[in-house]
Amino acid sequence: KRLILVGPPGSGKGTQSPIIKDEYCLCHLATGDMLRAAVAAKTPLGVKAKEAMEKGELVSDDLVVGIIDEAIEKPSCQKGFILDGFPRTVVQAQKLDEMLERRGTKIDKVLNFDIDDAILEERITGRWIHPSSGRTYHTKFAPPKAPGVDDVTGEPLIQRKDDTAEVLKSRLVAFHRQTEPVVNYYAQKSVVTNIHAAKPPKEVSEAVQKALAS
Ligand code: AP5
Ligand code: ZN
Image (cartoon, rainbow, N blue to C red; front, top):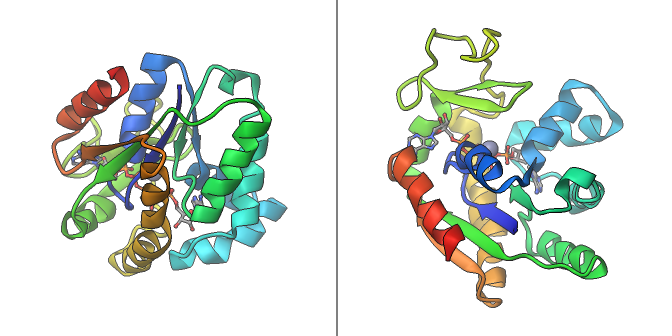
């Protein structure tokens, strides 16, 4: 399967992806995670992406299209993949279509994580992550076994630099202006399923399973 998860910041894309990944043996390609790793490693890509990310704006289409073009070549992605946070503009969606056409494949399904903006601030400001694995926690909704440390490795958890109420506002503006049109783009191809993303994680997972089974 070749899947796209689209939804605003904090809608649960990163929480649901590992569950889908394990169930269907797909690779999980999250442009946000890849960019954060590049910023941390101070690679040329990271240097170019840092400022936009900290302001809650989108990184240029060329940069992210390049990352995905390279990533979907990996042997582990040949059976299928989950795109989390990509495409985020109609230009990115068009480029992705071209990329897949060249390889004789296409997107099977787009899961649209539908949720009201009002509940996203609490999700974003309470999030803690384990950077090397991408595991995500929440102080109220998904607390780690011991405060501030990863359940599996015992390593410290961190908060993302863009996870403030202030930066969230810009991220939401970018989402509504630039990413919502992507949903319409795929709706015209009849591959979109809406997921009620405001429900508890387990119920969201069940809705995702149902959408993927059909
Ligand atoms: P990115 O990393 O993609 O961030 P985002 O889209 O803003 O999404 P988030 O990761 O914040 O949310 P999520 O849906 O994964 O939520 P999660 O599951 O963690 O992008 C970051 C930046 O990189 C962008 O701003 C941009 O600058 C750049 N970028 C990335 N891709 C790009 C692209 N294609 N083009 C251009 N620029 C790009 O959940 C959030 C919290 O809620 C967690 O604490 C979780 O535990 C909790 N939670 C999850 N589900 C539930 C639930 N059902 N109930 C209660 N709590 C829940
Ligand atoms: Zn995420």
